[in-house]
Amino acid sequence: MVEKGLLPSRFLFYLVTISMFLLILSSVFLLEFRNTSIIPTSVFKLFLVNSSSADIKPNVRSEQTTLPLIPSGNTQINSERSMRSGRLGCQVTNSSREIYSFGKQRNIVCDASQALLRVFMYDLPPEFHFGLVGWKGKVNQTWPNVDNPSRIPSYPGGLNLQHSIEYWLTLDLLSSNTPNVVRPCTVIRVKNSSLADVIFVPFFSSLSYNRHSKLHLKEKVSLNQILQENLVKFLKGQEEWKRLGGKDHLIIAHHPNSMLDARSKLGSAMFVLADFGRYPGDIANLGKDIIAPYRHLVRTIPNRESAPFHKRPILAYFQGAIYRKDGGIIRQELFYLLKDEKDIHFTFGSIRANGIKSAGQGMSSSKFCLNIAGDTPSSNRLFDAIASHCVPVIISDQIELPFEDVLDYSEFCLFVRGSDAVKKGYVLKLLRGIKQDKWTRMWEKLREIAHHFEYQYPSKPGDAVDMIWEEVSRKISSIRFKLHRNNRYSRSQFRLQNDSSS
Ligand SMILES: *[C@@H]1O[C@H](CO)[C@@H](O)[C@H](O)[C@H]1NC(C)=O
Ligand SMILES: *[C@@H]1O[C@H](CO)[C@@H](O)[C@H](O)[C@H]1NC(C)=O
Ligand SMILES: *[C@@H]1O[C@H](CO)[C@@H](O)[C@H](O)[C@H]1NC(C)=O
Ligand SMILES: *[C@@H]1O[C@H](CO)[C@@H](O)[C@H](O)[C@H]1NC(C)=O
Ligand SMILES: *[C@@H]1O[C@H](CO)[C@@H](O)[C@H](O)[C@H]1NC(C)=O
Image 1 (cartoon, rainbow, N blue to C red):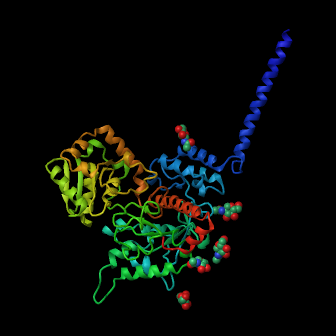
Image 2 (cartoon, rainbow, N blue to C red):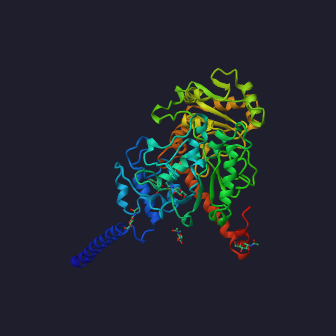
Image 3 (cartoon, rainbow, N blue to C red):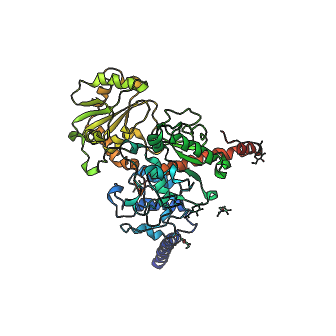
């Protein structure tokens, strides 16, 4: 009887041991062959993202010596990226051991087949781009050498800088072919346009407007107009443009008045804009175009210097011009409503270059920064506020915000309808009603997301350049979706290919 009872329990013991052994063996096996198709790469990348995120400091900017592999401390963006099945790992594909080598800077050539976006850039003559910033290359040299970040041609300073998006994106494309520049592999420039997802038009349209739209002596047309005319002629003659009637072309027109002459002729392309204020809806709209942040003018406040609630004596800060048009009425009304409050800074006059420093100091000493619609729905003031970690109060019903598909602005901004803002006591009551803990939550979120609005060279994961490329990639995929649906029946395909106007 005793032996009879012993046998099954020993048997059970062996059975459990053997199955545990098999279990462990199979998981080791699965891990060993993680690069084969046994586990979908997206699952593996998810695992990687999570397990490695513990090694990442929240502030990307503070760790310049480490390889910027993972976009940022922003979990929202991380999961967004990892959902897109593994694009994140573009630098990791050849050897996944690379991901464990944090702390060592490495020069990694991005692999075009793994990049999120492959971009073809026209080799337009320098007069369309770096020639406008005063760069002169050797005979027949189209592009400056960008392998030394301290020796790239610089963009004119002052207020020009707010619309310098064209410059940062072009530099990033150039650097994607420069092996010793470490940057995210989100986008890569390809030399064969048949392999490209997007065709980039390297025209510095905002600078062209800012610098060359005034007529000089004897001139009948401005240089800005001539460049736009030539650009339209050039594009309409390209095979790349004819392919999809320009729908896969990316044109930067960040200054609201840039591309004024050419925009309707090139309206089928994707634009990178500040807002839609001065565009008819058929030429620019959220369906195809991208809103990019202004480059902020005030200094970025490092997180460790950012003043908390009780060290920001000013309740609300506003500095700007009065316009007679639309939004200007709200500015005036608000001025009369708020001017007698001691802890509110409200002055008129646009900030000139020398006033930028004082504006920066004012914003970083304020709890709230007002962004009131002017003659356009957007302005660089919002991005100055974000760089100062001053909670933006957005009073601009028509505003469009950059990257709003991945950022929830209500976490770090207050929105007030124009009709409410002009009610007596409304804004004041709202701001005074936000106590330290609520304000601090918004401020902490600001500190977390501020790096998404930084333009820099070389680009870093999750910065403004990187975010714009990701936005382009999402947009182009929905544009292609529409194109492909239209192609379902050969008749409509026939019509589409011949019709470049819509
Ligand atoms: C990562 O792990 C945390 C817990 O450590 C979990 O809450 C989160 O959902 C995981 N995220 C992903 C993307 O797997
Ligand atoms: C990846 O590996 C393949 C072959 O192993 C090689 O041809 C290719 O150049 C490598 N790519 C990178 C980006 O190192
Ligand atoms: C520059 O380009 C022109 C036209 O393509 C060519 O004739 C000329 O030889 C080139 N000059 C140099 C220095 O490469
Ligand atoms: C560009 O790519 C296409 C498609 O792969 C190929 O047919 C063509 O030969 C390539 N052109 C050049 C110049 O390499
Ligand atoms: C459409 O385009 C094709 C090829 O480019 C051309 O042969 C055809 O004549 C065009 N049809 C019309 C109606 O324009």
